[in-house]
Length: 153
Image (cartoon, rainbow, N blue to C red; front, top):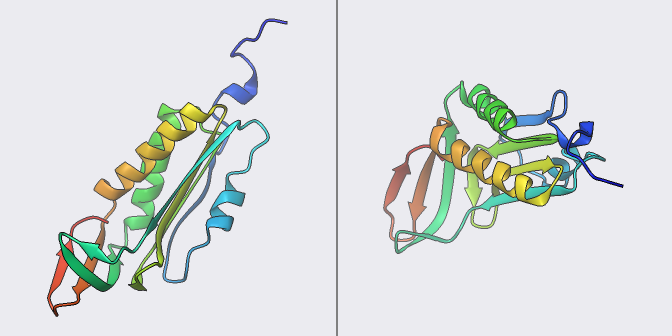
């Protein structure tokens, strides 16, 4: 039997953006993973961003994320662009705001596509564009008592 790419499962699903949120509460990898479940997806790529204990050669004790009221709408706009450019079956993205500690989850994104390469590409595009375009700011607190504000994400 010859395989073709004209099966509906090979194309972007109808309404593939399943979850977009900015939250003050802890994030769940399981929730995001469940949100992108799709029987036609042969690949799911998931990215988890955590608070690390250093930045720029300095020890980080804690940080806080804050956002503009448009942050969630901007996340949705970016998600819709990823969907337009990739055969996405399902997509989810959540970002945390508020005070976080080292090890806490800051962002979780996932993309389900018919094939793994598509899922990797779409997931990378999603997280990279979220990082550069969504108005979320990071306030880092260093062990030496200094602080720093970092632009979007």
